Length: 165
Figure (cartoon, rainbow, N blue to C red):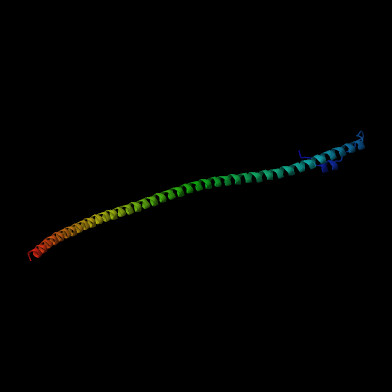
C-alpha cells in the first residue's frame, strides 16, 4: 500500500449516494485530517532532514575520531622513536666520554711517567754534581793542607838558615 500525501487527501473525491453523509461534515473532517497530516508530513520530512544531517555529523566525527586515533598512534610511535633516539644518543655521548676520559687519563699517566723520569734524572745529576763538588772541595782542601804543610817546612827551613848565618 502506498503512503498518502497531504495532496492525495486534499484531492480525494467521494461518490455521492442517496443516503450519503453530510457533505459539509465530511469536508470539514477531511480538512482537519489534511491539516494534521500535512503538519505531520512536514515534521516527518524535517526530522528526516535532521536525521540525515545528524548522520553526516556523526560520519564527520567518526572520521575525525579515526583521524585522531591515527594521529595519536603516530604521536605515540614518534615519541617512542624519540626516546629510542635519545637513549642511543645518550649511550653514544657516554661512550665518547669514556673514550675521552681514558685518553685524558692515559695522557696524564704518560706525563706523570715523563715527569718522574725527568725527576729521577735531575736527582741523579744532582747527586753526581754533589759528589764531584765534594771530591773537588776535598781535593782543594788536601792541596791547601799540603801547601800549608809545605809552607811550614819552608818557613822552618828559612828560619834555620837565618839562624845559621
